[in-house]
Length: 137
Image (cartoon, rainbow, N blue to C red; front, side, top):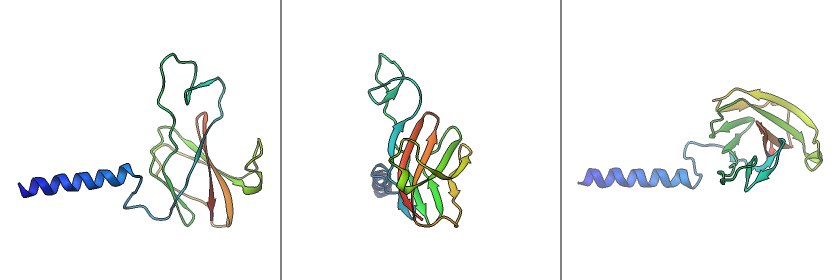
C-alpha cells in the first residue's frame, strides 16, 4: 500500500511540473513567443482555413536558450527554419534576417554561432506559422 501511495505521489508531482511548464532537466532561459499566421487564406477562431468546426488553436513551442544553444522541447513534425532578426527591425513588415538555419524534424538542439552577441529577435518558421520572440546572446 505504501508503494502505491508513493508511486501515485511521484506521478502527480511529475505531471504537475510538466503541466506548469517547469521542466526539471531544462537549463537556461525560456523564450516567450508570439504566434503569428503568415500563410494565405483566412483565419477563423485561431485556426487557418475556412472550417465550420472549431480547430485547436496553435500554441507557441517550448524553447529554452542556454548560452548559444536552443533547446527545443516541442517536437516539430516537419523541418523548421530558425532566424535571428535585427532587433531594431522586428516591428517592420519585413524584419532584417541576420542569420538563418534550416532545422530537420525531430531535432532537439540548435547551436547558434557564437559570433552573434547581444539582443536579437528570434523567429521560428513552421509551415505557414511564425513564432517570434526576443533573445539575448
